[in-house]
Length: 287
Image 1 (spheres, one colour):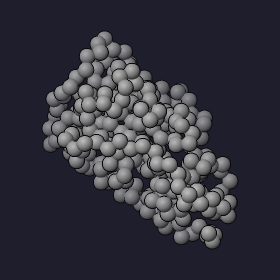
Image 2: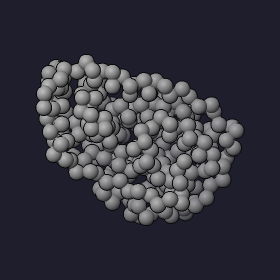
Image 3: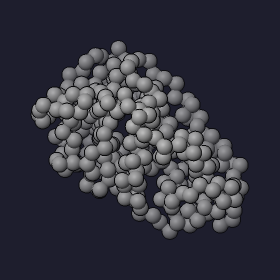
Image 4: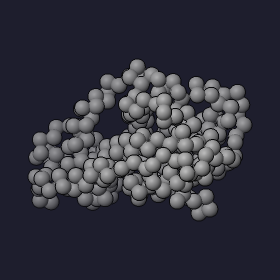
């Protein structure tokens, strides 16, 4: 469970060690030996090594799969026309930077309604924003911050299929990109949602999630780096707002008994386990 009472830990980028530099060199050779010609930057190799808990042999098949995924997705060709309806709903926006100069992705959960969303367009919208976000990071770190605004969050906004999709994308293709995440003003019923989702998120990633009030958010982010729509009960889905008043408490729209049944997340676990299996097929090299 996310806690309001425990002091939050602020995660900062860990400087690369000599051992990690050595592993990057080994991974480069293994990628060449396995005919992977994708031009990965060293920071990407580092992220995948850290995502594999330092086991560089497991990072190699993950990187090979990631290269194929990037080619298949044609990420550089995505345009706003590919997700126009999702973007128009003002669900996500890049705005501001945190105190470690990491760009911020704001997710306005109240504007995402499960019954009316287009999951494929939402996926493209997220990938488009996230790729732009990474391009705007410190190139030696590639870390971002995410703010989830839970104002007016209710069961109609609970979208396990979307969470499942994003969890898979982030864990498999963007390891160690998340620097910090803030969940603002979550209603009581979110505890039940989080209990389901947390089981399928890497423990390190889960530990980066901070539950906080809007007032508390200002202890982590500077005022001028906080989107005016955050906590603004008068903000519309188009992103305009008629008031900057902040809402500190939210009444639950519905109880936990109305939540949709949790999904089967086993295929995400299978994806991650396949990295371990595929590591055995990678041609090895001596250190």
